[in-house]
Length: 178
Image (cartoon, rainbow, N blue to C red):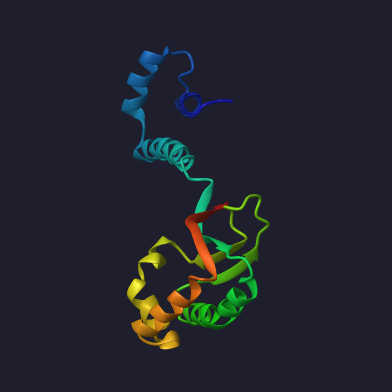
C-alpha cells in the first residue's frame, strides 16, 4: 500500500518537474515555488489521514437498555398465591410505570431450580438506561397512585413474605453491536 507521504512527493515532483533532485534539495526548492493552493491541498491530504486514524477508535457497540433481574424462591405450596399477587398488584404497578415512561417493560420467568437454594421464578424490569434508575421519586409517586400510601404498600410487602424469598438481584446492560 502506498502511503500518503509517497503520493505527496510524487505529486509535487510531477507538477514541479523536479524528478532529478534529491529529497533534501527537492523539499527546499519545492516549498519556495509552491502556490498557496498546492499548500492547501497538501494540508487537506494530511488532515484527512489524521481524521481517518482518529475514526478507528470508535466503539463497536452502543450501550442499550438496562435490565434488573430479581431471583425469587417461592415457598412450598405458595406458587399460585404468589402468581395471583404478581397478576394483580405487581402487574398494576409495572403497567403504570410503563405508561409513565419509567420502564420499557417487565417479564416473569419460571426457572427450574437445580438446587434447593436456587430461584424458581425470575422477574425482570427493563429500563431505557442507567439514568432511569435514578427516578425514584417518580416511581414512588406512580406506585402510590396504584397501591395507596406507604401503610398500604407495607401491608402488601408483609403479605408477600410468607410466599417467597428474594435470593438476590443484579443489573445487566445490553450492548448493541453496530
